[in-house]
Amino acid sequence: RAIVRDLTGVAEQNKCVCEVDPTVFDTRFLRKIDDLGEGHFGKVELCLYDPRGDGRGELVAVKSLKPNSKGQLACHLRKEIDTMRELYHHNIVKYKGVCSEEGGRTTKLIMEYLPAGSLKDYLPKRKHQTDLKRLLHYALQICQGMDYLGSQRFIHRDLAARNVLVENESTVKIGDFGLTKSMKEDKSYYTVKEETDSPVFWYAPECLMDCKFYPASDVWSFGVTLYELMTYCETSSSPTTMLQPTKGLMTLTRLVEVLIAGRRLPCPPRCPDTVYSLMRRCWEYDPANRIQFKGLITELETLLD
Ligand code: ADP
Ligand code: MG
Image 1 (cartoon, rainbow, N blue to C red):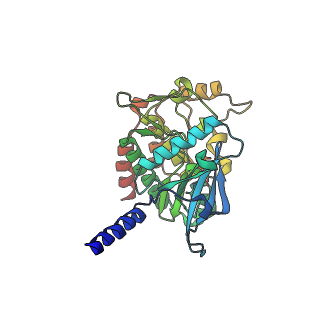
Image 2 (cartoon, helix red, strand yellow):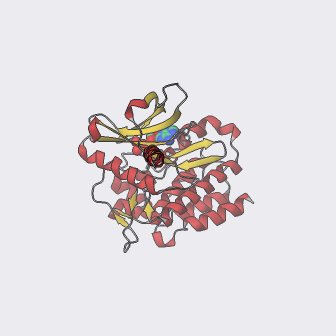
Image 3 (tube, rainbow, N blue to C red):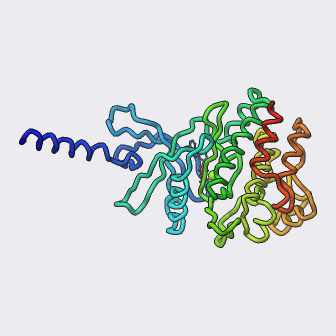
C-alpha cells in the first residue's frame, strides 16, 4: 500500500509539470535578436526563446509598448492580446502567449515570427518574381482571414499592406490587431470615442465623418490594400499621395469632400479592369452597397480559375 501511495505522489508531481501553461513565457529566457518594426504605439522585436539555454530555442516575434508610453496605451496592448487569443485561422498571425515583466506591471505579446516581414517590405523587393496570379492569391487569403474575423464579430480597423505579413511566397497572414474592436451582440457597427492618429487614407467616409466602423468599413480598407498589392506597395503610388489634390495640404475635411465628390484611387498601371472594378465595389460610398468579403472571395476565385 505504501508503494501505491508513493506512485500516487509521483503522478501528482507529474501532473503539476504537465499543467505548466505553455502560453506563459518566462522573461529570463527571452533574448532579443533584432528589431522588426515600429508603429504608433508598439514596437516588435525578434527574440529567441531559449529555456534550455543551448541556443536552439524558438524564434518568436514580441510586441511591447514603446518606452515612455502612457498607461492608456498599455490598455491597447492588453486588448490586442485579448483579441489575438481568440483568433485561429490559417491567414491570421498566430498568438503564442504573453510574457510579464516588472512584477506583472507590463505585458508583452508573443506571436509566431514571419521571417519575410510585411507585404509593404516584401513586395517592392519581389516585384519581378510576383505575377498577377500570385497577387490575387494574396488578396484571396486576406479576404479569407477577414471573412473569418467578421464571423467572430471583430472589426479590424487597420487593414493595410503594412499589417499583412508574409509567411512564404505563397502564404500571407493578417496581423496588427491593435485597433481591432469587438462588436456588441446587438450592434452592427462600432463607434470610436478616442481617436489617435488614424490611417485616414485607408478609411471609408463613414469612419472619417461619424467615427462609425462597420464590417463594410474593413471592406473599404481591403480595397485600398488591393490597390497597394497591384502597385507592389511602391511609395510613389502610395494611397497617401495619390488622393492628394494638386495643390495644398490634405486635411480631413478635404479628403471627405474628395470622396463625397466620387473621386477614388486611380487604376494602377497594368492592373486588369476586372481587378480595378473589384476595388471600386469596395469603395461604394454607402457601406450597404459595398461588396462583402464572401462576395470578394467568390469573385477572386473566379478570376484565379
Ligand atoms: P504597430 O501596431 O506598432 O503598427 P505591428 O503589429 O503592425 O505594430 O508591427 C509593426 C511591424 O513589425 C510590421 O509592419 C512588421 O514589419 C513587423 N512585424 C510585426 N509582427 C511581426 C511578426 N509576427 N513577424 C515578423 N515581423 C513582424
Ligand atoms: Mg501596424
